[in-house]
Image (cartoon, rainbow, N blue to C red; front, side, top):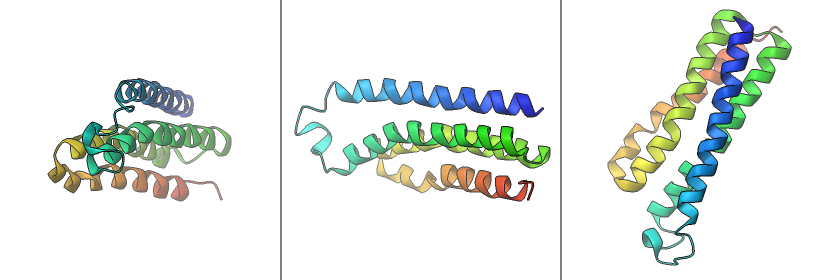
Length: 130
């Protein structure tokens, strides 16, 4: 079970890296336009950049969890639940950033990725072999 969690979390981290590169390449096609998405400091453009960078940030979070679990051996029940929580956070944060850039009312869904990552962190600490 431990090896499966570690390998899956590394895979999710690498998928996040790939999606970060792809989203950055797509966004990069338009960044030279000063008025694109309302200008550099506009809400839409900031949320789009946040969605792009969240692929990388939460990909690294999954890497760190996989390394922590591999080295420290977090309790299996907590490790599995934490892995699911981190995956939910990594999958939903960029989605809500891009959706919110499209339509502001989607901002009300940000509790989902935040809760996913927060629960993952708490479960990692609870399952840590102190």
